[in-house]
Length: 372
Image (cartoon, rainbow, N blue to C red; front, side, top):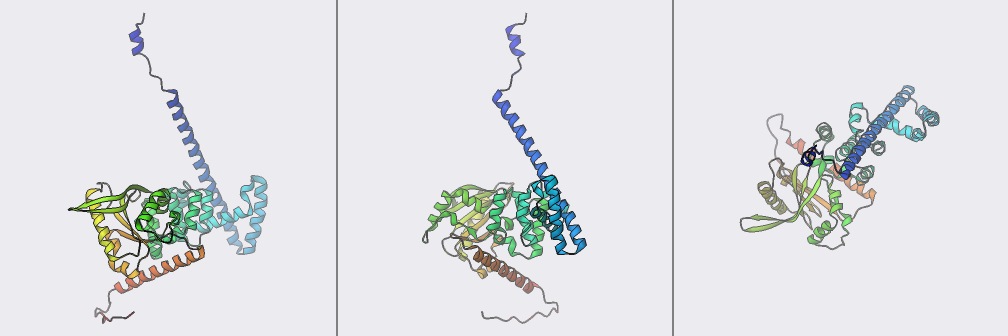
């Protein structure tokens, strides 16, 4: 006869029903997501191949009117056989898709994260670099279709530091992002920042901005971008016997570094650089972890002057300066202002590079001052 003690020692502990059910639900959900990703990827690649095949036929004929005719004809036949996914408009989207995304290998990587709805928004953007920027950032940061639409309408690309660089440098950085999945400050930080959601009146103090940001922290982080995590407000920084207070401290997962944010009511002043440098050196000494990159600073101000920015060489100190707008401009005026800012920044960069080219004669030139 088996004793009670031996029976107890041989008992197998059964899993709790609730825990088991939770685990099974997770397995089913993960499997469904995996299937959905595979279906999406296959569908996107199908649309690209359809567009590629139609495009080849149209290019062979070299007649624009032929393209319109063949798309209508094909749409009628394919819709009858396969349903509403092959309307004339969608076939035209597929042809455009094949025109602007030429490399199948790159598409394989993108379509693992981007749906056809994402691509339909991207393919009609007017520049290759802009299309690649939104596609890669969407892949890296996992934007929804709605988020992508908001980023495009908010002219995110035009507000990044990246857009102010020459095309070949922009291309180089986007290629690195594609191959290494590595974000840089030029991709993360923008100028200006839109803070219209804070609901500030015409007159306000720096503390009003900070208080409003804390009330609308979620929206503020959305405007900063994916990857920012709030760390502290009015971070106390003690140097010798003096106390300083940093307005806001964040951490960026992609950059793997602390981000110090200082709010300024008026325009940027040269003295603001020294203050931020002190904050950054203190953070590097007392808060930076071994696996992290050097802290970086963002000074948000009402405005800034171009020549001051160039002379101070703020990026060498790990400092970014950006304007904030508490009220949005009409879209056409916003486009105009950002386009002018990009052209001006690129022209200044080209001018600096041309002045840095050494004199090939070896004789040098006379230095003359020019009054502006």
